[in-house]
Amino acid sequence: MNGKLKNLVDYIGVSRLVVIGFLLLLMISVFPLGINPGMIYSDCLVRVGMNGFLVLSMMISIVCGAGLNFGLPIGILCGLFGGSIAVQFNWSGLGGFWGACLVSVPVAIIVGYLYAILLNNVKGSEMTVGNYMAFSIVSLMSIAWLVLPYSNPKIVWPITGVGLRTTMTLEENYDKVLDNFLKIDFKQMGILQDNPYWKDFSISTGLLLTFVVGCLLMWLFMKTKAGVIMRCSGGNPGFSRTLGINNNKIRTIGIVASTVIAAIGINIYSQSYGFYQFYSAPLMMAFPAMAAILIGGATPKKATVFNVVLGVILFQSLLTLATPVANALINAGSISEVVRIIVQNGIILYALTKIKSNGGK
Image 1 (spheres, rainbow, N blue to C red):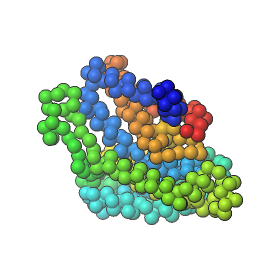
Image 2: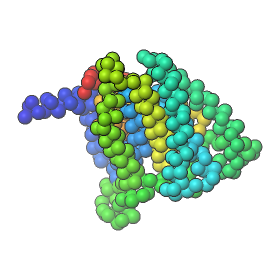
Image 3: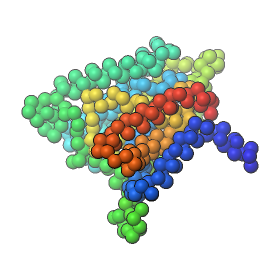
Image 4: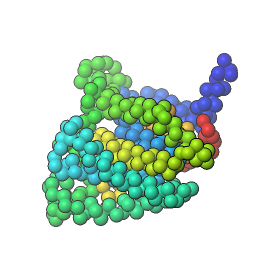
């Protein structure tokens, strides 16, 4: 029994057990603090589904040997472009959402291919170059959002009629279209309405199913011949070269896939959030995704679907629970945003310090 427990601890890792323990403490603390657990747990599930694809895109970048994808905003911008086209032509419902993803994919393939060429020429510095490349492209697209010929009055600046607004609402298009698909809502169904803890609990079934399907497809891909070759190439480029594997080609496929998944991921995120955010909004979105997969046990050279699922659950749940718990403990009006920033950046810092201690687990 002790041997099995030790193996479990070794597999999960002491650092992640600390995070899991802290998360459980927060989950339990909502009851004595008078916080509505049904509502806050529902928010945790929504955030997991919202951010899942962005973390999944980080995984394929690691597996192919390109390391942590600090260029994630590049894929996000491709998704925002597809979303802006969908809103420009007033696409709505599930068809409108998938139409936005469909427009985003070919753009992401082209951009991802060009980005892969760049990274293949700066091997060993992918994370640094990717970071600066993302910052540059976000700034460039800030100009593009102003000059592209959008004409829908809902999305352009009202006075000049030129350029996209900073925030674009999806209320009349596909706001929460995945969240509400097959949604299990205790309040609407009349379940446990006499229970003060669970009467507001809900499960965004469509959103979570989309994330589950994405994880399942990624897991199946990693079991195929192409997936095994990619893992071999990313983990040991020298050995794979002796087997006749073209490492640059494998990295290109992985980087393009990461860009495409990020483009789809931002559409999933935005439909759940209810808005598209342009200009500087994508600038820092790589860091939460990076922190989540590292908290889940990944390293810059090794990642699995399990790391993605565990990481996004831990990171997003901590982020969701910490703010209301802090507000309940410290009675101050402006503390929530301060706590959110401290917790988010604290988890990112903790994840970075645990890169080496994650080892090969």
